[in-house]
Amino acid sequence: MQVTKVEALTKTKWKVELDGQFAFVLYKKEISRFGIEVNGELSEELYEQIKKNVVLKRAKLRAMHLLTDMARTESQLRDKLKRNMYPEDVISQAIAYVKSFGYINDEAYIENFIQSKRETKSRKEIYALLLGKGVSSEQIDLVFEQCYEKNTEQEAISRLIRKRNVDILHASEQELHKLYGYLARKGFQYDDIRQVIQNYKDNA
Picture 1 (cartoon, helix red, strand yellow):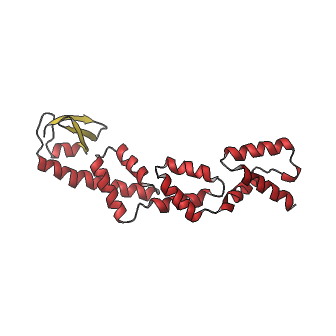
Picture 2: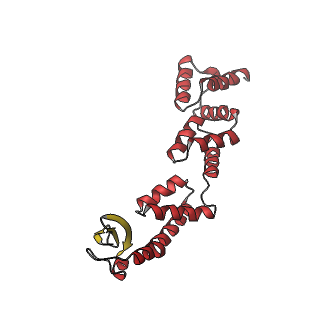
Picture 3: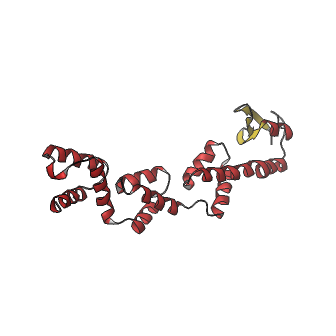
């Protein structure tokens, strides 16, 4: 394989292209150690050695560090490693490595996320946020079915009403209209909003 490009990304990191294709990112001292230079040749054996012993090892450590820093979905971790410019096959191997230890579990992530947001956000809002984190709608639906109860929405509505200090019993029609609009924009269903407000009046 011919080294077609060696480009500085930072003072210490360099991007290497082989036969016109991105290969990997190495530190400057590694470029020197492996004798990599533009128009030079890199044997298949050395290429595999670099990927396995240097790049993959580094990707595994990076993945572990990212998961220690905060919980992430598989999609989030993959995106982070892509931004760190690891090759696709190396990323897949690094993810398989951390998954083998149980460090990535999208269903557990979804459940913890739902539990942390359910008191102040609607199911619709939570659903959208989870989709944005790269988990599938099928996974979200499954976990919602297992851990989300109907009255959870109404409890969240009640908390938001208390947070906004709305006096339901003495609120004007205009104030109630604004409250309905606010809660609807948060993704709550009209029937749930109406039921919570009615409960306030019935229990007065």
